[in-house]
Amino acid sequence: MINVVMFGPPGAGKGTQAKLLSEKFGFVYVATGDMFRNHIKNETPLGKLAQFYIDKGDLVPDEVTVNMIKEEITKNPEASGIIFDGFPRTIVQAEVLDELLKDNNQKIDAVFALEVPEEVLIQRILNRGKTSGRKDDTDPRTIKRRLEKYHTATEPLKKYYDEKQVLHSIDGLQSIDEIHRLISEIIEHIQNGDGR
Ligand code: ADP
Image 1 (cartoon, protein in one colour):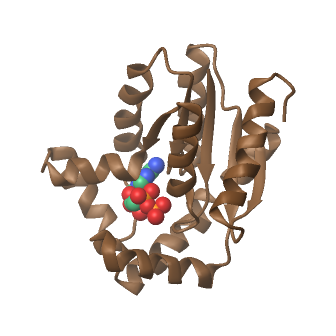
Image 2: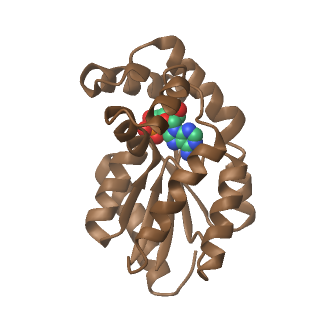
């Protein structure tokens, strides 16, 4: 069982890579953004709460996010691996995740940080907004707020995971195939037991 985190700012390509990896390795794919959007679509109480934050470009409070993800982790005991996309996004979330995994004798094995310059991110998000139907992808002010939140709340996780020696920094301007190849190689190393 291996646990992998796709890390990076909005628009970095986490979802694209996570989907390719889950197909290749058969990992369970857990994307908090998708989970929230499902709740919003189904008009659940959690969805209504999440939408309030998401529409402003803010993070959903840790407590709400953590409760939602707990179920997801315990739901898939026989998976060969889990790939997290959009989670954790704060130090608190990362600490809770570590605790949850530890209870099952597991840990985060690799964090792939996709590095992309801000002006490229904004272009990518605006492009995606033309077809995604996501309100948070069309308003430049919301996009700016999401990027700010990334820097203040999420980016400190790089240090957190670097200290645990699981962080892999990847140039997110490379082609989708090349990034996929690089990440796959690292995961294969981990699966073969030869480490970082
Ligand atoms: P992106 O990575 O492009 O920002 P996501 O689909 O991952 O898109 O997330 C969309 C929104 O959902 C975020 O802007 C945030 O409001 C909320 N969200 C997703 N994951 C989390 C999380 N782990 N903690 C708090 N809020 C989250």
